[in-house]
Length: 121
Image (cartoon, rainbow, N blue to C red; front, top):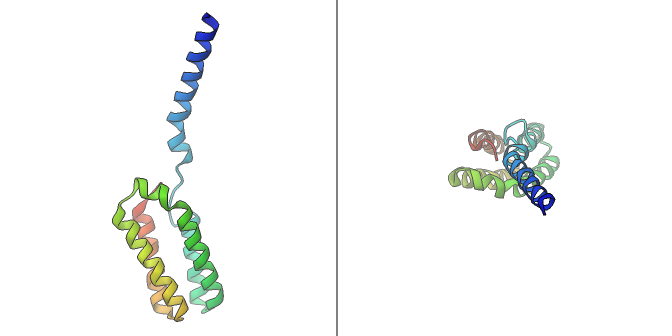
């Protein structure tokens, strides 16, 4: 009976520690150096080289990566910044489709700024 009580208390302590550490362990920086930031950088390089097929593929990959992290980011971030990022993502897709280099570069620059503002998730 006493051994069972110790096991339960030990398990509760372990679970408490795990839950306390989990938010900082699983939190990943949403910065220009992260996966979204690297996707923006690669897309910008393709746009600057006017390699529109590669830019379209990289923008699609960037969008899928954004969809993967959107919910955790939205929980901890400002909704306006999330909407602004998604608006710039749509602008980027349109600019690449129209092969508008200056609009695509502008959208990518704004996306980088928004990623810095959103911070971490």
